Length: 288
Image (cartoon, rainbow, N blue to C red; front, side, top):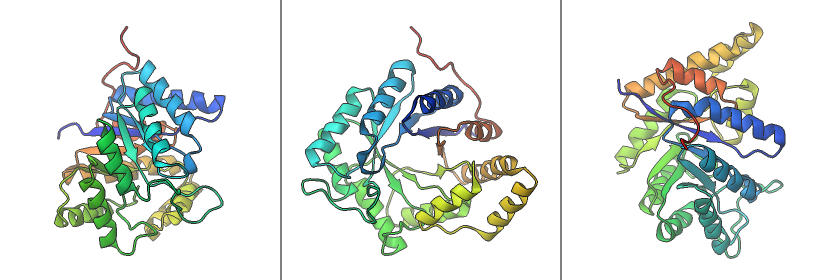
C-alpha cells in the first residue's frame, strides 16, 4: 500500500502555556511530513491576530505548508479579503474557507451588512483575488442547518464549482459514514478530492458533546465500548485501536489522504499514524 498522505489541524494559542503546547504538537507531528497543517480561526473571528501569528511562526521556523482558516463572520467583504491577504503575507499558502460559527450568544449565522452571505461567495472571491489553494468543509452527516442530505451535497458542489480545490470533512465515528458520503458525492458529479477528517478521541464525553452540537449520531456500541474502557482505564488504547482500524478501512477503500484534528494534543495522532505505518521522515527545522 502506498504511504498515505496526512495533514494536521492546530488551533492558535491564547496563553504562554498554550504556546508551548502548540510547539510540542508541531515538534511531535512535523517529522511525519504532512502535506499541510492548518490553523483554526475562532468563532466570530475572535482569533484573527492569533491565527496570523501562529501562521507566521510556523512558516518562519519550519518547512511546513501552512493553511489558515478563514470565515465570513462579523466582517465585511473588504475586511475578510484583507485578512486572507495578511495570512498569505505571513507565510500561509493555503486557505480553509468556511462560513463560520456564530459568535457566542447567538444561535444562528447572521450576514454582516457588507459581508459575504455564504462560504460559496467567500470561495468565489478568494479564487478571484488570490492564487492560493482553497479547501472547504464537508459533512458526511448532514449539517444541522441542512434541509436534507442531498442539499448538503449540492451545497458542497457549489463551493467546489466556485473555485475550491478540495473538501475536508467533519469528523465521524464509523468508516461507512464517510464511504457512503463519498459515493453520494460521486453520483452528484463531484470529482474533487474529499479528505476524511479524523478526530483522535482524547475525551469520550467531550467527543459526544461536540457530536451533539453538530447533529451527529453516536453509535450505541461505541458508547458502551468507552464506558467499559473508562472503567478499566484503557480509553486511550481503545481510541488508538478504533481510529487505526477506521483509517485502515478508509485506506483500503481507496482514500489517499487523512486529515487529523489534533486539538493541540499530538500523541494520540502520532500513535495512530505510527500504527498505520506513517513514521518520521524528516527533521522539523528549516535548513539554514
